[in-house]
Image (cartoon, helix red, strand yellow):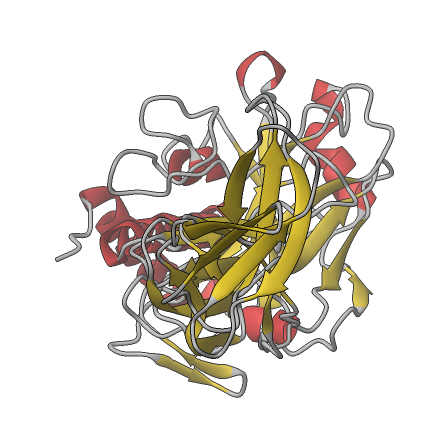
Length: 434
């Protein structure tokens, strides 16, 4: 059970008191909705720390989720001048830690919205990208306990901003319904850093850190000099074992919503991710053989399409390989037998499985036998071979270099053979397949 700290309880009581004061009835103070509002946080820490931190309400997360695939919008709830007002004393926009996050609280069960029914403790937050053109790897979804604790930290940021906004008792460019400039010295227990900072190091933005909190740093730090746009990737994480309404999955990686870009001039945009398609497997194909003598080495490829995060191969002989790319895979069948090959591909929009029953046939290696001389020729033969399997006869005079001298397939009666008509005084022969 999640407990509410005395600090949070006092904050909520202060907010209730603030709401009933008649002189504040018409004021446009910070209007945070804990049911899904997206918050942007800006701060500087350590040697770059200044007088203020900034919290901005960007609107409800459903607005971002409902954007068309690939659409880009300008973030207009704050302006470059408001960023300047908050950080001009610390050198402007460089060394600026920034992130975007959301959750919902105050609802006993799932949050039902036009874009899906989200399980309790669903989180949305950013991960910093080191390359403005490349998405970060999708994070693994959190346990319910981790998510619930992080939810309390996120709502604490919104509640703290509301408390500070009302206590300042003024409405202007730096304190209004969507933005509050938080004086660090005046409100040390309610500012952004109190809730987003690690419990052991507040300069690290991970909503408290520790085993039962978020294991990722969510903030991007602008460089000095700040010359190119900095990217934060925005993810949706339903708790593990709860169904994500967008992907339909109960575990695995987070759903990628899109990305924010903060520009050197202080402006910001958001781009909705491209649509994801459920993976489809049209076929599984061997690039070498499907039958032969054991040990039989087979290289597999696939033609799966869609948005795929993992390829899981089960070769039927106890070997399972999980790939995060569509690279070819190799498996060796050491013993004879018929083997069923299964490929499952997983992606944000679902999964697909293709099963090929008895796809690989590995046969015990037969030995050369039935040696005979006839008319000066050496006749080699055998029976009980695997019908239809291609075989080759290799010849050598020194056991070091082997030369293919004959290729055929085992006959329908299981027989195979070779007549050596060369003039070698002595030679060695091997039977191989293929």
